[in-house]
Length: 56
Image (cartoon, rainbow, N blue to C red; front, side, top):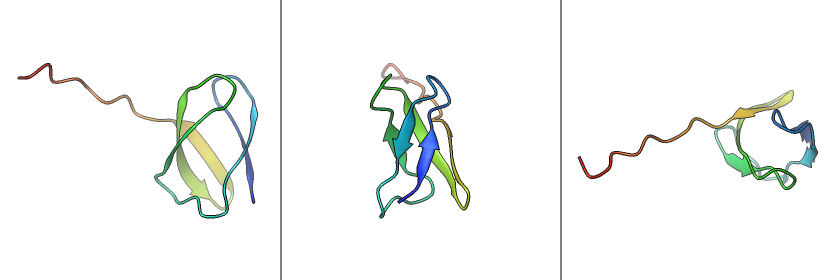
């Protein structure tokens, strides 16, 4: 298992063994959505915010 650091609150997060690149994880401390962008080395960044279409 690998560890990453939350880019928002600097919490240490342990990635599950079956984590894949592109997966969205949630920081257990601050609740922000993080996207796994690399597994070697383990790296995350803030997940892109989905734009609401408001029914358009």
